[in-house]
Image 1: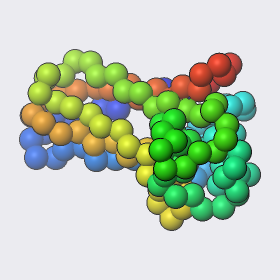
Image 2: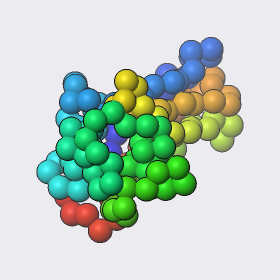
Image 3: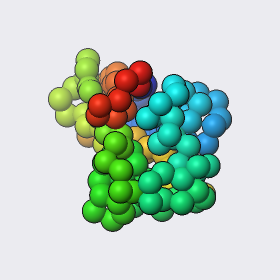
Image 4: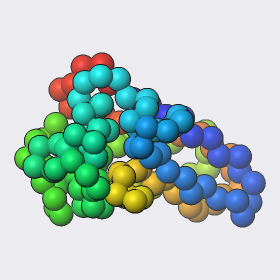
Length: 135
């Protein structure tokens, strides 16, 4: 699954946004994912996922689900997502960070731009589940 992010390059405005997983308007990981592995990840609050019971998730669980970081929580299923970013058409001084977090127990991906924020830029943020078809 891929999202395109646009940054206008207006000095001082920066970019700090997130992609939630609550079933709201796009962009939303639950709304936008197709049936299969990605949808099961997006439904983790509703259905549970592996060792993670249904219900509110922690930041460590969100990192395990969306960044394949099992250092704080392990769902026991290794088919979790890897959030990746690709930067194009921007100053090399501009950097993008992705971090998995939660809001009211719902996993989300937080996206922050920092560095020389005077240049306009576009990014693709990809969510990939290794071995899954139809992401």
